[in-house]
Image 1 (spheres, rainbow, N blue to C red):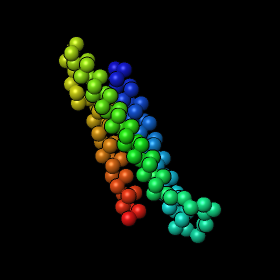
Image 2: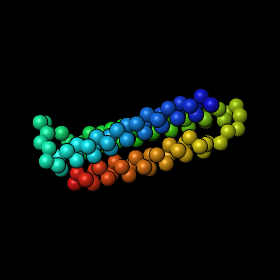
Image 3: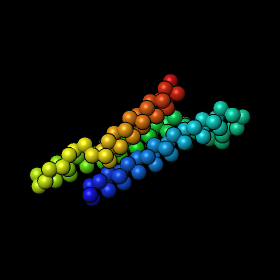
Image 4: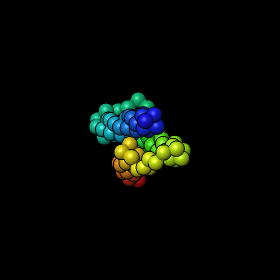
Length: 108
């Protein structure tokens, strides 16, 4: 159960980074598209991509750590690899990759 709680903490951290990165991207993009002159040149896409990429990295690291712990636990008792938190992490990773590539497409 500790491995599941740890993975859920990784998922919460990743969700915060992904949503914060996308929000920063949209706010700065809206300010740049509007009549507002920003005092400094902010690169909205870069900020959004960095935070979204860090969120994806959190999901990858957390999922790998969870998988390795489950592999060690399986030596003692049978436990399935594909549990609910891992499926949630994979779904969130697909959403995060979609957001990352949509930000990237907005740049090009």
